[in-house]
Structure formats: structure tokens, C-alpha cells
Image (cartoon, rainbow, N blue to C red; front, side, top):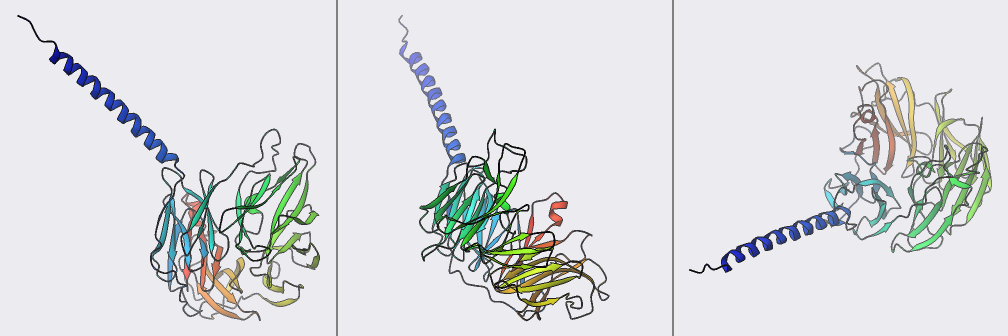
Length: 437
């Protein structure tokens, strides 16, 4: 009797085919997953509806409503607040308080920082060094993989830090704003609308930008100015260090090169400041011409639109405003008697100064005989003549623990972004409050 061998061979072939198919599917799944993890492609949902500026309430009293964001510092562009949300970025309409669009990246890529370029464009720097520049109103955007131009061995000095910063620069003659990417060894400028490279400025081998992430005064200088400030150190490998304030204009050309023992600060409105032992020297960043000296020694200094320069005098407990064009004193006041309801205050101290939408803002800590707890915080809006035209008590921060203070981040007409520094002490993600009047 003859036994058929075809059926056994068939089963074996079927098992081999099944195993091979499983291996192929597993490999394909791994490849797809790996591709998803490193894919540069964004996913944009929206825009939804029409982006409109917010309506503002009365200048006195608390904010009409508040948004809270964590992680990356939010920025305000047009009528939206751009905040980090999970691994992506969300644009929230300041009037509607609803999501206008959401931008995500696949895998574990997250938004590392968000930068305002001007009133139309924002830039998102992702954790894999990809830069996305987006027109906030339309959602149109382009991408760039940022090349690494940081300091490398053997030229690494202890005083030159790596980093990457993005700034908005107004074009020299019409057109779109420029997106300026600043790294320790190179500065590159791109057209905000098209993404095309406009110019590049490379530093010499013995030079490096000290700290690109703090090239200007944090949070006070508004974007869209005509110059970008670099604090450059020379002779990286030697023991002697010399610092220079270097200013580039919208064409990528050097307009100012000053030797200074201290880093220069960006005062906004294309004004550059050099802080000495008892004065602040102010220069025109476009021409490099020295403008005037101010007898102010205490930071913070702040200006927003190039018209007003604010400075604090800790010894006198005052805030003074100067005309940025010529240094003429406009007003000086301690604001010590200004309370949320015009009540007498005491123990007043200034935590921050800024100019948003042409109005001076003074962030204060205060203690009042009418308050049962402390410290308490308020934000004053001051007119050109020095009159307080708005007082906003910051209820989110009041009655908090000692030495946990809010700080100013950014703002606009009727809108202010504050950082809740208690999140740092609690070892949490950075927390921000967006208060809308």
C-alpha cells in the first residue's frame, strides 16, 4: 500500500509560508514604527473659523478671563496665544478661547521653544532641531532642519555656552520679516514667507557668541526690529577673554562692534545698552552712534517699541521713564500708594518692567493694611505722563509662599503673560498664566 507524501509536504510549506509572512509583517511594522518616530512631517488641524483680536474690559480690576499653559513659554501673535500642548503647539484665539489650529509632530518629538517673529509669523523649534515657521492666521508653514553650528572641541571654553535662539528681524526694504537663527558659530537669516535663505554670517575660529538664548533682554524687546545683537567672545583657546557687542543689520552686515567688559543688552527699538559701574550707555544699533548716558545702575531696563526706556532705582524705590530717542526724563514715581482699590500700600517692590502695545507695565509685590495675607502682586499700566491708568490684581499669585514671585514674559493690548515661578520650586513643568483684560 503506497502512502501519499503530498499532504505532509503541503502542511510544511504552509507553515514555512506563515512563518515567513509573520517575519515580513513584523519587519514592516518595525520599519513603519521607526519611520513614524523620526518622520519630519507635521500634522496640522485647523484653522477653525476666523482669528479675531480679543475684546478688552475696563483697565481697573481683575482680568476678564485667564488661560494657563505649562512647559514652553507662550507667545502672542495677532489674536492668538501659541502654547505647548503635549508634544505639539496649539493656537488659542484670545477672543474665543478656543483652539484655532493645532500643530503636531509624530513620535516623541516635542516643541522645545516657541518664538514670535512679528505680528504674522511664529517659529517653533522642535527637540530634533527642526524649525517650523508658521503664518498664524492662515496656518501655512515651512520647515527647516537646522544645521549644527555650536562650539565643538578642542575650542570649547568654560565661558561659551552652546544654544540656539530664533529672532524676528524687520526687512530692510518691504517684504516679509526675516527669521534669524543664532548659534555660537553662525547666524543665518531666512525669509519668513518663503523659507529661502537671505544671508549668513559666520564667526572666525577664535570667536563664539557667548549665549545665543539670552542675546537680548529676556521678554522685553519686541520682535520685528531692524538689528540683532550678539555678544561675542574672542580667543577661545587662550586664557585671555575679550567681549564684543556686535550688531548685524537686516542685510547681515556689521553696524556696531564695541569692546566691553560686560555683555551688552538689547533695549528694543534698535537700542543697545552697555551697563557700566554707574551708568547705562545707549547706542543706536543701526548706525552705531552713541546716543546718551543714563545715571541708572539697577536692572531691569525695558523698552518695547523704541519710544520709552524704563529703568529701576532700587535705592530710591522708583521707576523712571526716559524718551528713548534722546534720554530725556518723562516721569519718575515709586507708585507706593497705589493699591488695587487706590488704598495705601506699604512694602512695595518692583519685580519687572516692560512696555507692551506702547504702554509701560510695572509688576509689583506689595503688602497692604487692608490685606489679610501676603505677598500680593499687581500689574500697573502707566501712561506717557506717568499716570496709573490700569491696575490689575494678580489673584492667581497672591497670598502665596514667601519668595515665590511671578515674572513678566510678554504682552499686548489688554493681554499679559506671566510666569508662575512657584512651579520651578515645586520641580514641576514651568507654568504660565495668560491674563486677558
